[in-house]
Image (cartoon, rainbow, N blue to C red):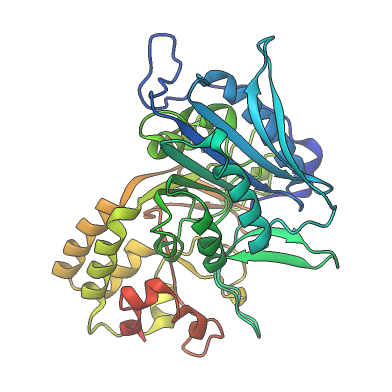
Length: 409
């Protein structure tokens, strides 16, 4: 889930824009849009505690689209803030202002936007339309995000939060997201504007759906991506790294390193969100080699899981009893493998993780500010013990099987 605080919802103010580099630029600092056609869909599952941030982000998108040459580009946004959901295109009107062009409404105040059928309907409406056929496509999933939930019925990593007709919370598991994306064209990038989603298990599960995955391994600031600077990058060359850099640099420019670890004031209820951010990009074509390298590095290296976890960086600052265990992947392999195997693995990792940046500290709504020293941008799950409820589910994931994770147990 995103880092949020009650005061944020009351006092969040839009802040002034600082220029952020985004791919190749011309002399007037406007992103150069390639000649090929591009369509990007932003999927906002925002019928939850993030609704107010969603409305702000939509305003930022309307601002950002003004910096995009629109002859060959389309920015579509699915919006569920509660009430009737809609699919719109953000366009520049004749008077030079930006606005929404309504494409479709989805009746019903209780629509479950994280349902498989519901998402497939939107993806088909957006990408199958002759009006939005393109040479390249992008997808942004905007919502809460979380991971392995140990319970009597363990869930896999999930993305999105909504409510069904009975008022019950609903989530989309990553396996369902993979299924949903089968009705979409192959994507140039997926941006997860949600917490904890830069996990190797997630990217590997979705590796055939997109070329690049942009996300944070930990919590992101409540306002999420600064779309006024991110949107132009979506339609520039090298979109994935451009988006990541714009996302990071926006918050880095506001970062206040004087905020102390454990300082409750780091929630930035004044609207400036000065407590930092971290963003990474994974390249899907390198993930199979990373799986092979991981299997080789871990072979014959059975580990004491509890002792190993105690020495690794955990991106999730919730109570350890919650078993949300998002450990730094590079640290994990380095701790288990011998030096030669680790160095070989590191080459595969560096080929897959093509962008990574973090401020010195990040903020968690559960654990205050915390140091990011020694982190590397991609998380890896470890169960709390061999008896953890989620282990049986984890062992069925594509990553577990491809990367030989059973060697650790």
